[in-house]
Image (tube, rainbow, N blue to C red; front, top):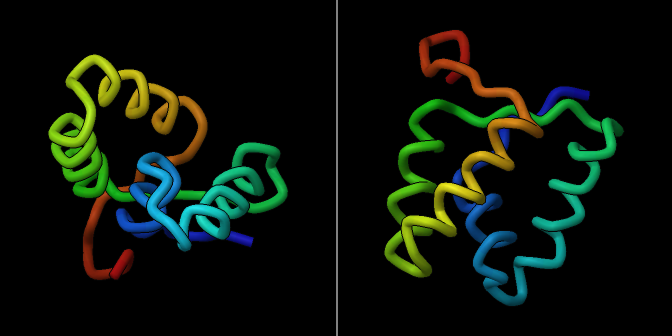
Length: 82
């Protein structure tokens, strides 16, 4: 199953925003273990970096983004994606 991760799902998991973080972490774990094929957009990557660096630090945002880039697939935004 292919899943396009919304920015909010990723941010819920990273920032542990209750009560949504539990479900978000389960989704990300399914992608991490290969049970689902997770994707996020290039736009989401920049949004995640910006939001997470404001909430934590640029160093932590870099670490989080590096993990996401190494774990999930990045897709461009175009008509087909939308």
